[in-house]
Image (tube, rainbow, N blue to C red; front, top):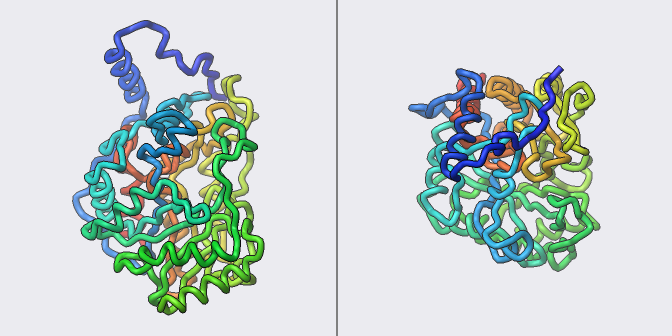
Amino acid sequence: MLRRIAQPTRWLAKAQPADRLYDAHVGNLLGHYPAGDYKPIASEAPAKTDVRLVAYYLPQFHPTAENDAWWGKGFTEWRNVARAFPVFDGHYQPRLPGELGYYDLRLPEIMRRQVELAKLYGISAFCFHLYWFGGRRLLEDPLDHYLATADLDLPFCLCWANETWSRRWSGREQDVLLAQRHSAEDDVAVIRGLDKYFRDPRYLKIDGKPVFTIYRASLFPDLKATIARWRAEMATLGYPGIYLIATNAFDFVGHEDVGFDALSEFPPHGIRTPNVESDMAVAPIKKGGRIRRYPDVVATEAAKRMGSGVIHPGVMPSWDNSARRPTSAQIYHGSTPALFEEWLGHAMKRAQANPANERLVFINAWNEWGEGAYLEPDLRYGYAYLDACAEALRNHR
């Protein structure tokens, strides 16, 4: 039985100058990390294999006019990350970034270093989340900087996060900030709007076809018609086609029936493991959400077999959205780099069931700090989760 934490902010009990308070806070956190967790940076990259690792990339870490209006001046995801606190003994919160710090994606050196790290540890591509609302773009600056900077030489692709934006972080999902409305006209417009990315030589392609992922395929009113329009427009633009992937988010199935080329897993969507919260001593401040065990996830996923059609396995280094939902988080407790490497190894073996040029594993994510799902180095583990990727690649047969 885990001990109850009576007061999540207990380190604030004594009044101290701000700099000393922060140093004491960080020192307290670092002092409680188990010895041996931290992994230093690698010296060489792993050899390439027949399976490519594609990491989702969140372009949230820079201020925008919309976020200023909706959440307060200067808001970025770091504001959520910094407020997280533990709600049970051993709960890994808050999470403090390592080498890259609380970065701002307006600084070009940040993205350059991210690319260097990804290549050093064998990541084959970033998959940028795309926010498109009837031609209006959000959080587009990092992607457009990437496009304009040819020496950022890591392949990339796009995942359309085609959801309505609301105040769900504050528990008010009914308050719509920006609605997503799909239409026949927008089906064509989005392809034309993305043409400049698809034409970039770094864009991830399969048999010359740009790879394009749809996060919530079920939100389209007529998927077959939409996909037909996309394929026709790509032909008009001179492409040999488009490689369309649907994710399994919100239990979407039947990708072949509507015309997708493949389905990608997007954990924690589609994962079924027991809720263990009732077995734990959880602080009373937590009123909702669920706690599950990461080792249970790995065991379940290790036994999974490929379904029909092309399915790209998905993995997550961890998952804990306490930063976004402090009192109602979904937490997958007990992730370690070794367990993540084990899961990734199984996923890579499953990917081999796909045709030789379609062996992808999607990682959620490169930098989803607000959801505790990131490969980037932090102060506890250092480069250990990145190293797990490299080791999985080295051990892949």
